[in-house]
Image 1 (spheres, rainbow, N blue to C red):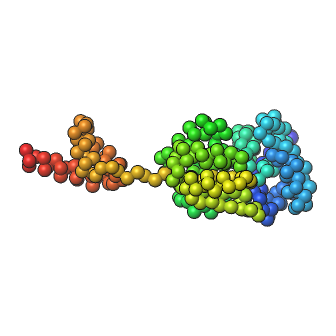
Image 2 (cartoon, helix red, strand yellow; image 1 turned 90 degrees about the vertical axis):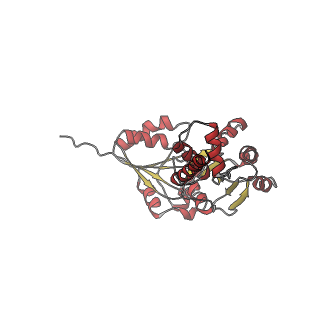
Image 3 (tube, rainbow, N blue to C red; image 1 turned 90 degrees about the horizontal axis):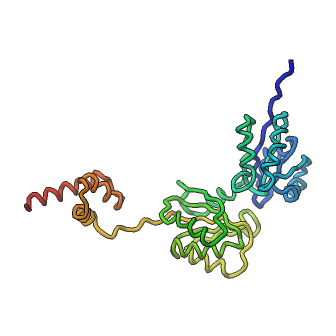
Length: 286
């Protein structure tokens, strides 16, 4: 009786985003032990391999051939061969090729294992000095002005720090749109060339960032971070808001209390007490 073939493992291996010392010992071992490495750009990855003396064969797996190459790679995995997936820099499948191959492996019951390491998103977030308790990652903004402005509108009231990627030749146009849509005073951070010789982390307002990066040609990979939107202070007091809603709507008292509490970031029960007190005062006046 023929023994069933045990499938191999697809290792998703993070590689340095700049400084070659940022590769892990486990990553080096995996890259040397697997049968083949699928790389976004084999010419780029060959430099990394030569530096660390890795002789494993490379095959390309990038945006325009990932669907077709996936058949070949999945076949190797199903034959019991283990493979590694790498991108040009950082963690594969995060705004980089690889997610389609990972999905197909999961669907086919092939084991997928992460080999953690560098990530431009997390590296920038951890050093920008913006709130990190809650954040969202939205990858690259659209390249065209109108589409980019529509995308930026999503962050008008975003309560989390937002992490974005941007191409250096589009940064100034992006900052112009950011000032237009989110306002000159929106606090942001721009990380450039992380872990490299000319690493830069700019912190300030959108207008200040636009002025700073307009001084010369922008070079290097860019991570753009938007601070959470600042809540606008209510234009009326709690009592004024209650009185307005009582006059303009037929809402029950509890609903009024709930709306006012949300506007003023207060406890609903506390506002409801004020509502009841005003109602009692009206009764006495009557």
